[in-house]
Each structure stands twice: as structure tokens, then as C-alpha cells.
Image (cartoon, rainbow over all chains, first blue to last red; front, top):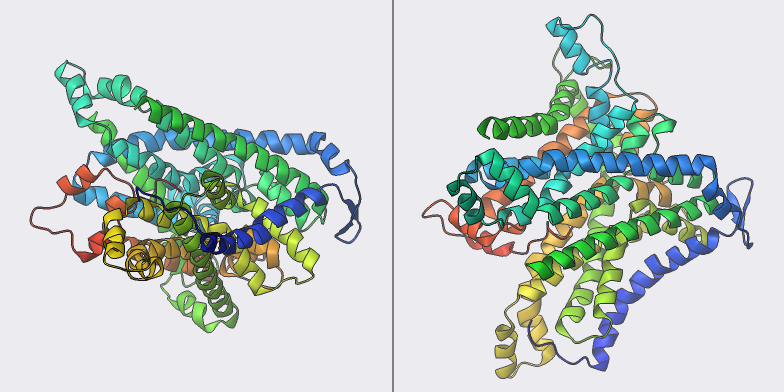
Length: 285
Length: 289
């Protein structure tokens, strides 16, 4: 599509349909959410028009700040964990022969297409007392009594890493397949060990995609709802769980709306950072 | 390096497989309660998926939402992607960003927006609300696949059609649209699978009246465990594995995921032509999502 045509009046007519759908069902709801954040909450799960800053003020309350710091912290941790495993894994993957290469990709894609609710459930079984790891250890004689490892912080972290891992592999995959083999071969001809090549050549030239992958995983885990709800106690809830809880069971929609706008701003800032990193690497390349 | 390679690969495979294996074992347990090692063998939890009306309804409802919302998502994305890439539109980058924005933001934001919106209209708790919300949220996927197809499309094909006297409308119908079909199918499939698995939007929009499969699974986990959930999980895993294995056998999975073309060609076993299906999926979508 090298030559773009000049738009005619009909072109705008065609464009208007999807724009109208997006406008009515995405922009308008978002605007209504912003307006709602100023509304007065009334008992019974409703809210009425008002111009109050109560919900916004609650963004500085301890309970919210604690949730926000916890969510950002656990998402950063999950992102770091994912990259630490996914980067070497994807690097080795792109250097495998075709058959194991495709087989591992199918495994990654299958894990990717699992519903969060199923991932949460499978980990709750695996870490649970009834049929989990500890039962295998008891069966093998390594432990005396089965134990439950969930709900807990580690369970939430493992679950988040599990759902984010396939995304992480798929964001690293295109760039790592393009990593010039001549570069690594040159390093080894000059006497670097494979390990030395990986650390001194592959990792440094991949730094931008590592950063971009890490940030994308961060936004992705920040949006996760079911993992924290299924594998954590209320003190392990992430912002997404807290927002939905306020919107449904606590029936405080204005406060939920204010928190959602905070989450939007945070996510947009991180996505903006990714775009910046990518445009900078493109300029260098 | 070699031991490290084996360690990382084995660790990843065990990590990705471990919960799946445990659930598969639980799903064939004869007992109502979870036991390990399992006692007895039974497939009754699988038949319960279809014979129990509550599970069957949830499955049918989820499939309905997934098909309708994916179709709607493609219907929104196709004219959008086409006009933005075929014409010189001012603000095109901005409009494209608006198109991918819903999916870039955490789903709870779209979910809460849709909840507030439908509450205001008074049209509450209906299945069509979920369909529309999913369609808008997942329309990003076909938008990306179709835009990439527009970019990689050979412009000389359209020019040839016009030189031979085809009107712009005829060119679109007979040249551009058929060439876009594979990317529309890819976008449809991606929206379909993700809609089937989506929880939070469906829950906040109509969770108390429209019980989709993920909501049903979540509820049954809250109100006591049934091995049926394990059976659902196994079915999902097998379906996903089968779909991607087929894509790898008959399509060009590596190219589809954005692998460098040189790798795709070099590693293709000698004598194996990139069959007709190999030509179908050629847009690197994985990279954009």
C-alpha cells in the first residue's frame, strides 16, 4: 500500500461507522466513568449526580495507597521473574531445530489461550492441601503431612507469572529470531565462551526489547483480576480486584471510577514508555 | 551453556505443564473430592459437562457471546483498518491509537465503563450488552491483523485492476476484500478464543444474570469444588493444543508469530513446499498484541 488515495466524501462515511461504534461504546462510557467519579454515592448501590471530590480524595487514603503500591510491586516482581526465565528460554528456543522449536511454541500458545480462571484453579489445586505438590511429597515419603501453600503471596506471584509468561515469550520472539547469528559467531571466533557470548553480547544488544517486554508484562499483570482473587487473601488483592469489588459487592461505583482513572493513567504512562523505547531502537537500527 | 540450555528448557516445560497434569489427574478421579494419588477412574465429570443443564447453558452462552462478539469485532475493524491504510486521512495515527486503546488498557477499565454506561441506559444485565462490550474490547485484534495485511498487500494488484477498468468499488470487492479474508479470519479466531475466556468484563456488565463459562467456573470454585471444573479445564487445554498443532501443521505458525522469514525458510524441511495454508497466515500478529 505505497500510494494512498485521496479520501472522498464517501470514505468518511465508511470511516464514520466504526468510529461511531467506538465512540458510543468506548469513549462515551469512559467519559461517563470520569463524570461518575464526581458523583455522590448513595446507599443501596446507586449514585446520583453531584460534583464531589470525595472519591478522588479517597485515592490518598491509606487503604488505596496500600493496594496501589502492592499491585505495582507484585506486577514489577512478576515482570522481572518472567523476563528472567523467558529471555534465556526464548533465546534457546530460536536456536533449536524445527521440531522442538514448533512443539515448544505450541505449548506456550496453549498456555496463553488458557482462561485466567482455569490457570487460577489449576494452581490452587497444585498448591492446595487436597491434591497438590505436598501430596506428591508425602507419597514419596519426603513429607509427613500434606500442607496448603495457597492462598498466599507466593501463590499469587506464581499465578501472575504463569499467565504473563507466554505473552513475554511472544513479545521477545520476533526480535530474538532476527538476532544476527553472525554476531554471536563472531564473538565465539574471537574466543568468547557460549556463556560469555550470551552475557556480553546477546543480553546487551537485546536490552531495549527486554525493557519493552518487561513493561508490557507489567501492564498485563496489573490488569489481572482472577489470579489474585483466586490465589490470594484480601491483603494480596491487586487494584483490578479492588476496583471490581468496589463496583459490584461494595456498590461504591464513584470510588471505583476514580481508581479506574488512576489505573488508566498509570497504564498509559507505561505504554507510552514502551512506545518511546521502541521508536528509539528503530532509529538506532 | 549446554546444561543451562537444558535446565531452562526443562524448567519452563515443567512450569507450564505441572498444573495441567495435576488437573488432568483430578478430572478422572472417581471420588467427588480431590484426592492424590487418585482413587478409581471415571469419565463421569466429562459427561456431566453436557448432561448438567447448568454447565451446558453456560457453555452455549459463552459460545454465543464469543461468535457474535468476534463477528462484530471484525465488522468494526475491517472498514476501520481499510480506510486508515488505503486513504490519506489526517489524524490516522491518532484514530488507530484509539482503535487499539481498549485492549491496551487493563480490562477492568472497559468493564467499569460499560457497567456505568448500561446502568445509565436502563438496559441492564442482558447478553447483548456483553456481546457489544467484548466486541469493542477485542476489535483491536482484527484491527491489528487487517492493518498488517493492508500494509503487506502488493499495490500493483489494485493498480492492475483499475487499469483494466474496474471501479474503486469493484476493486475493493474483487481484489482487496478477498486478500483481506485470511487476516479477518485470524482476527476473528483471536477475538473468539479470548472472548470465550474473558471474565471481568462479562462479570461487571451482566455477571449476575448472564452466567458465562468463566463466571460459572469461578462461582463453582467459590461455592465448593466439583471435579467438573477440572474436566472443563482439560477440555479447554486439549482444544487449544489441537488448534495450534493444526496451525503449525497446515499453516505457517512461525511466520504468524513474527519469526524472521529467513528462519522460517531455512528450517523448513527440504522438499516441503509452503502449501496453500502456509500462504494464508502470513501476518505477524503475535508481535503487536
